[in-house]
Image (cartoon, rainbow, N blue to C red; front, side, top):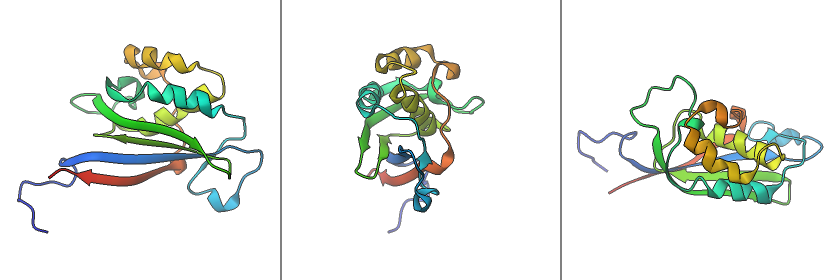
Length: 155
């Protein structure tokens, strides 16, 4: 339908949802190589869920932003951050927010992988957010596990 001439599809977004998928098993699945990140070390999904819960709400996500990103503010609101594992050993990290910084979801995924692997404790998330330092968070997970699932526009 027709929209006002000042309307822009990027700037009028009210919510975005991304999924990051991790194939967490001993052997690869060739048919999932393009849309999942293969990670063969065991991950503790319960710890990942606990860590993800700290990200919900309005926070300064500077620790989860790629270095050199040019944005006015690094404050974003995450409405939900869920971690689930299905019967095919695919762990899905589903994040919905009002906007995302450059590589933010991939850095969240990399950090949750570290938590699930036991390299970080779930309760370190508030400290990572508070440091506002990219080196405090985990690595940037590979791009091929990331999928944009949807965009919602306001009225």
